Image (tube, rainbow, N blue to C red; front, side):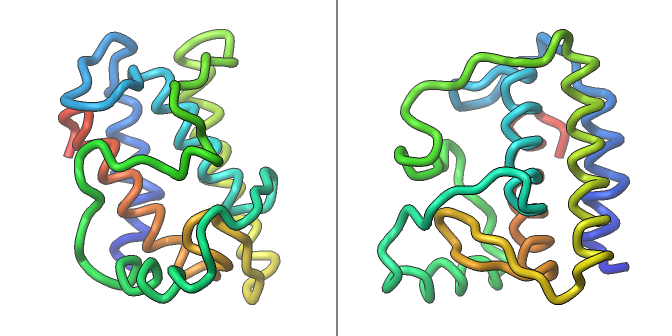
Length: 154
């Protein structure tokens, strides 16, 4: 298990457990509950449960993949393409913040189980293109670290 995989499986989920529903964000429009559901959806994309089309021109993929392979973190207020998430935050869909956290944990488990069963699979990210398990781990690490920083947990 790589350090980044361990971080996603344990450190990230431990931090999410400590996140309060009313925790203030250092930046961005999402509150803690919305962020939790947003990250859940992101994991569902990686395990093929949610599908998007490529939202950027293909000629940009090499630049995006180079960023993915780098140690450069996402900047504050980094946004997904508007064609993917829109301009406004999505309303929450879970019944409680506790349920949202459980759904997030399940989506992380589902991601690792998906690639355990299909180790050579790739799934499409709307801005980074087709990604294999190792590339998804790099992207998930950057993404969850970004949101943990947003809420003062990293």
